[in-house]
Length: 189
View: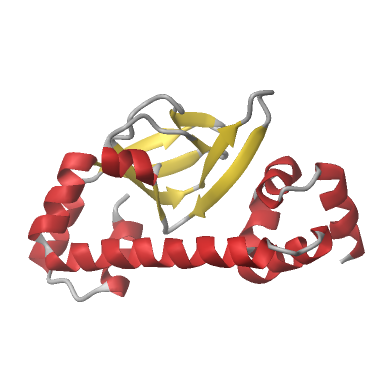
């Protein structure tokens, strides 16, 4: 159950067996259902998740109840509602598994303990933050001035797993287009 996380950590940094076992010992496993909410928008985020299997989506809702997907994380990635996790204020988004998922999670207290006491874990955390920032910037700058077709082409190039594993409705909300527009564009590509 912890093999995928172990391989991920070893790929990211040089870890001896004792340090690796220490890190792994702070993670617990959870199996989720399809569309299970891990965090509501008014709750304080207390966990960081590593995805063994499945997908986590971060989304918001508008006043009319429409969902706006903000981020998707797949196998071998970490995900959380980061602003709430960091500042311990109620989240402004939801965290949801959109497929049956197998997740490993670590509490905020244990997470920051590892960041403070294990330099290799702090390095991995920094890399996760940097990569997340880069991807968010690429999405923001990539989408500015793009028409719907260019947005779909961007997804195909940068995040192809979205079109393979996520419903058209969720991908469309991520792109800021309608599901019917997404279907039409996909049929032409």
